[in-house]
Length: 308
Image 1: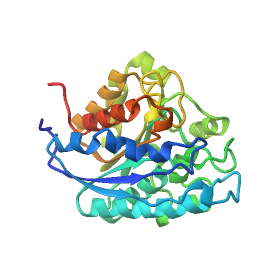
Image 2: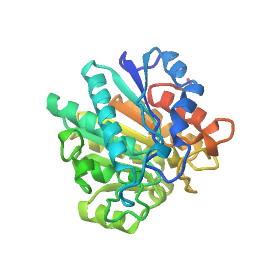
Image 3: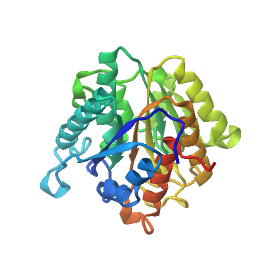
């Protein structure tokens, strides 16, 4: 089936990271998504897909935690820098970078690469963050020390300097150019930051009241006024665990199957997404790779797959 999006070459970049999370297993996410046929689904839509393999990441067993408030910081910095370079290079070649994880600390790298590319092109980047969590903690507010909960804060230039300085740009994205969708679990420090920065956060309560179609169309309309590059960061735990149990940090009360597809289909219809990442697929907690299969289907929807 052909899609109505511009012809595009896709670079598939694996980031098998579990150092940023509190639960093992998400490092197998890229493999699970490949097994679920993510490349074939995109090729069936008419794309040329180049699987660039995985960024090499050292196992937890080979490392020590030097700071319990910033667990595995050095390796996360090293590998996110490599990821940033791959994303930036992909965009420079006029390809579409599709990053598959791995825990959501990967966003520190992907957004650094996007931001660097946009700066060179004199473009303003925007971010749609689809997640049960806002990932707005810093080393001062974190209840766990897990860096996957700090990704957006670091992107905004908040927190540890090694995280915020990654790839040499601070901040990567302006607060007004970020929209959070599907949020339903926040820590105290995150709530305060949302209020202080006036961030646009659309919780599951608001989605229940107004509908996902209204929310995503409002977000896209707002972002298109100010940005030239939209990056979508999709955490699979945005979906209700009854639909997708194999995720890093499951939280009840998420998007249902059709809401998630409508969300991604609407993004595709906009034709304004320039890069994408999917995070937190955890095969250990899954049933027959169902969560990875749903995620692969959602990626296809975001790239133009339709029922008719």
